[in-house]
Length: 299
Image (cartoon, rainbow, N blue to C red; front, side, top):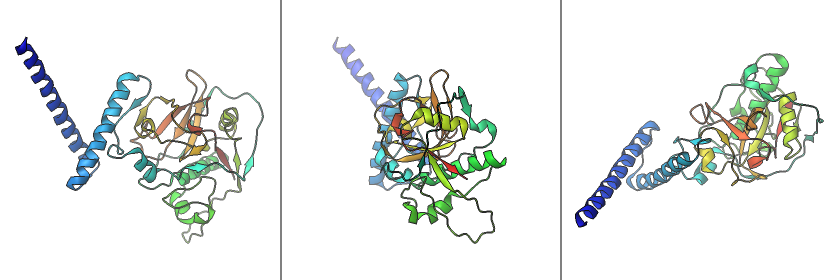
């Protein structure tokens, strides 16, 4: 019996050593993939965060077959650090734009504006909290394409640089419907926006009507949770998030009322994040505030 117990303890110890070695290898591979270098103290701290995030992803995927997570460039960061670097300041909602209920007409069972060629390619805001610019510009690009038949590629950088007088703060966040006009010396065409039309706050029936009738809609939501940071595929259905305190602006480009009703949403974290840069979000519960601050440009 003693021999058996000793053998089991030795086996468990070997497993622990193997797991530790495996994580050491994964940490080195991760740093190599994202070209990360740290001093000794910082490396120890970042490795601990990486291991916690890795374990969270593994445990989540083992018990959830619908929503899958995967390691990405945020693996060495805490969620509060991601919020600092990648999203806008958490904002309580106020509005001064036109709010419109566009009626109670029937909508299509599904629509995906990408299939019409009016959604620009996935972009990457990098480590700049400029999601407001990518969301707003994405909406303007799409609505020009719908009206004029050709898809322009517009400059988020100009919004980041030139809209500080409209409540935005460069790489430290802003609001997607507070865009200003900056004088540019480059010989390019001006694309002008007359105003914005807002969806009644929290009204998802109106949001899908806007998507069905007008086109892609600039939206915002709370993304301060690891299921969003490490999202890989599936439909997000998260209850531990806020509906009226938002920190990330994105672009809703479609929806489906078939199967599990959901939105199709364009992010600005590059094509290696999520479903080639997109994610799907549960529809019908204003989850994480996705319908709380939704708007389209009026050209």
